[in-house]
Length: 305
Image (cartoon, rainbow, N blue to C red):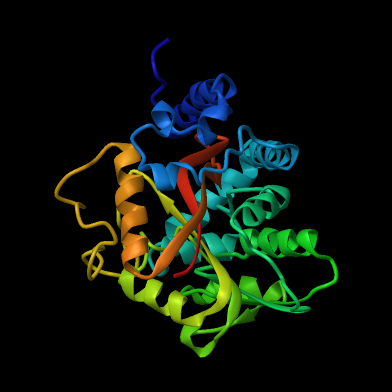
């Protein structure tokens, strides 16, 4: 059948075919390393935590995203608003204002199990500080906070968040998170997360140094990076970082498992120890063309050397 000509008709046509592909896609592939990770250095490969498949909470999020994408009038409203707002605002601010494009990586149960695999412990501390760097709308921050209380319901948890978008800062305050502008203002933080920030910030190595400085000596940092690595800085005219996180970019691309090796070696060179890592989908709410979108994340839990 020929692709229709009208803009709306083409979008609905694409959605029908894109969603048909999604329905037949094996979601277990999100969590499986290519070639079983045989190219990954042994000391790293032994730290792999296999999530295996999406859990019921993940599937529920996907179902909700499908329902939202199927709401024709809502999606048309978003298209009209974005066309106007993008003249004045960044994509992130547009999403924050419209409360659309929310992200999902793991359920709170999966996060809790993953943190446990990385040796995250509360010790004798009943008071725990958690910082999420580049927290966006705070939905993933909230799941991580719930994961911590899932591990220990008796803790007193302080949740801090940083974010460059002023509209997203409002979304974070609505969730009663303490919004900070400089992560170096905190010290001895038990858990610091930077999820899909290292390839979007202007200076990822400085950010990693700041995380190292603010982390508790026995704390953990949780980092997520989309692979294949492709750096993009939204708030820059060139959209390029001061220095890329992975030195081979943009000159050449490397196989997935080889990029994992380079990424982990980079983290080691900056004073971190690899405690555990996993592979997961980085999900985003859909639109008129597709029910939801995804990239592939490598999530790693690190400690101070």
